[in-house]
Length: 397
Picture 1 (tube, rainbow, N blue to C red):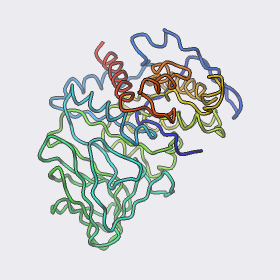
Picture 2: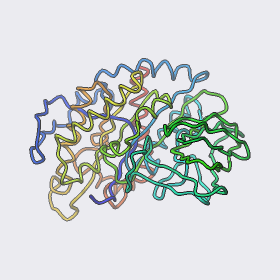
Picture 3: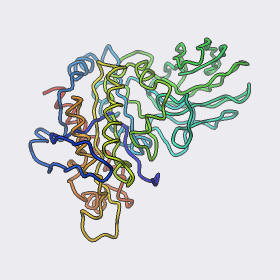
Picture 4: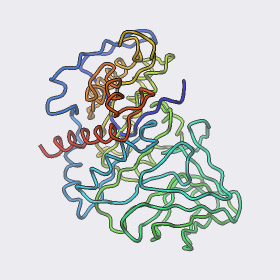
């Protein structure tokens, strides 16, 4: 499909109360009408998420403990708009725990609201958006040094003078990671992804890898000097669907577990709605499988599904139901059903925006972009504030 459609990154599962039959590609899923009982106290439905109590306790101890929120999604997450606003809300109340898990190098088309990258010299970058590798893990990027003098620079936008940095790496034979002149030994991992020892570095630090052995990096884990507050990691890929996680073949859920997430948000659905070749039954199976991977790897983490918002596919059509993607509401219904069957949280972004074709109204208000898919900064701010408030109401009733 066209890669112009991108989604946010929050682990959120959408499920409805209607039983879903095993369906072929063209078998419709009847969407339930938006009704008040789904949105009592907001647009977030808790279908029995057992991790909420632990998440609430963790946040309540934020002055002494670190809480990690991971958002995995499409373009909204790749641009760190919705996730970035959610980060600000969490950190304003519970404290800034650091930058989080990020790509080792800048990824074209992606941005972080809390990190800047310098020019990379002597590195090769692979990305699962367009490439395949059996070694892709969480995040879907692999950086490989090409020469002994490879170097790049990472600048964290934070209030502290120093942060702690670790690299997610795989090596045959071992190597040395240089972080702003500090040598960190990368032990032979036999090709498995592992986290390096932590190094105390300034907010802007250089990074290089030396050694004769094959070594690759899949990410950086940047935390505050003291382990407290909240981190929101944004792992988004432009144009991605939930099936993207199947390209992260090297135990991505196990890598996620290394980062001790307390809340995982899955934010997909827009690109699926634009995919006219999508099999709804296969989509449901994929969604369930990915949720279960997270449950198996990190059983104490809460899971949140963020549904797709309003979007327009056929701008020239005269009737609303013809303008918006035909699969949009069936996708939302499947997410709601899966959220119910897998006992997760589900946030109905579509309903919050106003339902059918509501993005057209938001464009007129300056809260959505003319592509009728993405929001403006103001639109994302309001969306994130609504999601944040609904989460707060669930965590602190």
